[in-house]
Amino acid sequence: MSDPAPFPSRISHAEALAIVRTLGVARATGAQDVSLARAHGHVLAADLVAGIAQPPFDNSAMDGYALRHVDLVPDGITRLRLVGEQFAGRAQPFLVGAGECVRITTGAPLPSGTDTVAMKEDARVDGDKVDVLVAPAAGRHVRLAGEDCVPGDLLLRAGEVLTPARVALAASQGVPTLQVARRPTVAVFTTGDELVEPGLPLAPGQIHNSNRELLMGLLRAEGLEPVAWPTLPDDPEQVESALRHAGHAFDLVLTCGAVSVGEKDHIPALLQAEARIAFWKVRMKPGMPVLLAEGGGLGEALFLCLPGNPVSVLATWLTLGRPLVDAMQGRTAARPRWRARLATPWHKGHERLEFLRGRLGQGADGVPEVEPSPADGSHRMRAAADADVLLVLNEGARDYPAGAFVDVLPC
Image (cartoon, rainbow, N blue to C red; front, top):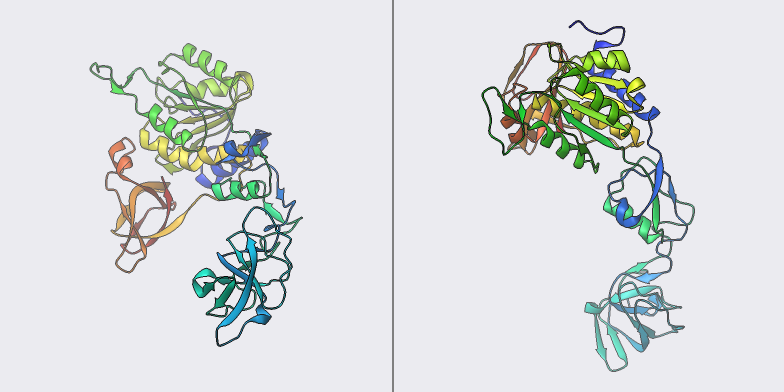
């Protein structure tokens, strides 16, 4: 099979990534309102602006005694008269005068007339008298109204991922729902006559289907709810029927295998005839045959077709598939990418950008250090299972000495 043309072929990973992001933005999934309980992990679709001050009132940061700082003896013990108690939850109508104090708990409103709190541990009580043993600084242990935010402050930006702390910030504003990007619907296909489900016996020439579990797990880790379809046989009519059905029902169709140039690799020819191919083949290792297309006659879905080797699935999903769904959801938050020192030398004998498996640790000096896996074949899933990062080795053949710094991506 020759390369379908015309469309971008054998492009750089950077070019492929730019196309992925452009198509993802063009296929934005839209927004929906969800409760705070369901908002965790979603991408925020609209800015959140403060409607109330936080804290909404001056309050105590400690259990202790609210007082007027002017009454304190700087270098000695101050005796004050205890005139009441102020607990969290309901403000009492106190007006504290000279030489007086109020017992107060953490979070309770600061009584009128007071400006400082002495910790309970720094005071001694004798009936209705309180001896302040250590004079706190003026304003000590007081949380001022609006010191965290005031009405009109921008609290959260569209495109940010809603972490637990960000959801809690929204809750502190009394917001019951948030507008988030709808997560794309995803159909997952694995292909090949040789694939047998785990738990079933293998005939000669067959292997167990590991790609489905790999890809479903990667998708679920992003909060997506993918639908796994039955394994597709190497039959062009059945491949076309299944992809057409999924292309009309899902936002994104992911396939594994049947995307290279073999006699049974039917997907490229199908997409060339029925869809609009954005690119096929990227100068990357592993994963060069990866293909991206818009549905066209197969529906309105995007089709991201990954190679069949499991490590290729891992590398192409993390570096192209995940940016695609990020763009579809309007995510602006960057994914983690670190710099680490090579623990051992590595010879790169090809020109493609390479994503090499490795384990991240740290050297004796505390600097992040990565150990590349010598098992670099794209079929070697055990090496991927042992890895926690992908090393990014730039285009061009070269030797990397031990101690050279490279980018690493968590996987």
